[in-house]
Length: 114
View (cartoon, rainbow, N blue to C red):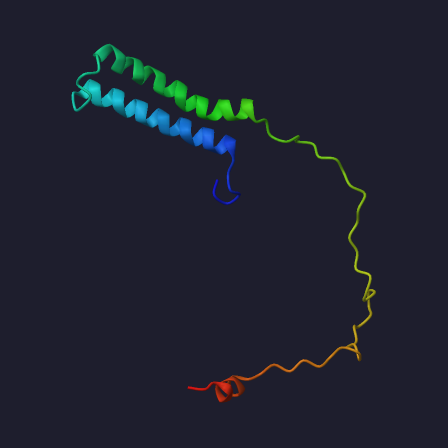
């Protein structure tokens, strides 16, 4: 999701997964008597029953709202080929190219003033 900056489908799917886990956690906590005491037991069982539906919706809803691009892509007539050098030819250096000299570490140290 982070590699391509995500979008609405990833955001909805992540939100539904988070909602599913929180819903299941609230239901289980109430059934075990470890929290949410004001929540009736029948609604805790309802939350547990709805949790798999929410988790399944995290897969189904983004696919239905934002369908993927077409599986069959149009073909192209473009080709890629090397123009130079031709097969068997050895490339020669260009006489008109400027000569590049790279500075050494010693040259860099001499120019640094303290």
